[in-house]
Length: 248
Image (tube, rainbow, N blue to C red):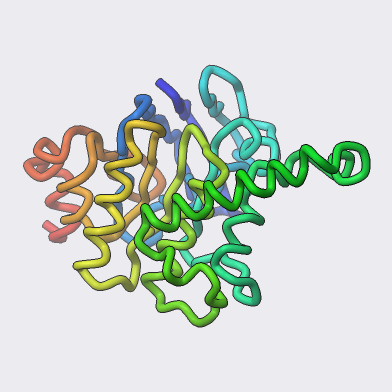
């Protein structure tokens, strides 16, 4: 398993947002995380990615305990994420957003002062890689447009492209198709499917139907706990899940 979450707890004041959450995600798979509003999904993603520190429990990525690491340290190990509210640099062009997300940013200023030639070569390679990803996502015609001029769906694609630009082993997607029309939503997940050969995805999404079509495994959260897990077919027939969503 590339990701293992073991008995994780997180409280805010007297409210327990995560109550003994455990899950595991296999390599080169797409795992979905669903549940009603306030069930703890985004809190769990924030804990896994280091933006929140759990109160109890353990998180392992590729066999390494990342429970106490900061977000940038986790990213350097090969886990990147997107956010529920799209986080892009709106004053930069699409291409500039991609280049900012490159692994080259980890090299530091030393390259600038002591190995300028290598840095120039890396910049050219990054620009080529960015162009390939933008073409893959079918937004390469927008690469010189400013990000604030993009539609909501195009910004979602750019956010995914920025995550892929870092070439992570795993990507956490927090509502990647929220507010996106169904045709584009399917296109985004089709792109994720194609990437599954290279990396692993854990996806938080309210659009349950689309997860049923694309996920290998689905976890269901309610009131801070994992209450069900299984394949899409198993989840669709799970009485606990039906009760949660239909109020039975």
